[in-house]
Image (cartoon, rainbow, N blue to C red; front, side, top):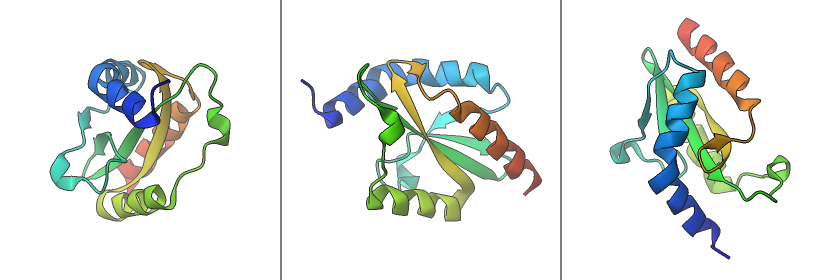
Amino acid sequence: MLSSRVRRFILIKYFAPMFIDNLSKLIPEIKFIEFDSKFRLSADIDYIGYVGNNAFGIQIKPITAKANFGNYSMSERMKHSFESFRRKFGGEVFIVFSIKEQIQNKEIIEDIRKEIKRLKIR
């Protein structure tokens, strides 16, 4: 069985571009770009979507078919990283669970759309 670190590396390396392409089709008004390493607050944010001068973040979490992402709990490091992102860019960071390039927590799309609207009027 692969460790979570190895699974995450495989996801980001091989499936993230396809995943982001799928997400872009669902939210076509936003261009998603890989989060630049010069802004890295940690390895917690994979992609960023700009809305004017603000942005929101996407973290892609790979899961196995048997995983229960409903019980996922963020670490304190991740909470700190996401808060730092909010202060710097104005937007929330969304954790998107994925099996390969497919979004598993589809309800997150509506949350992202609400965040886009919020950032547009900010």
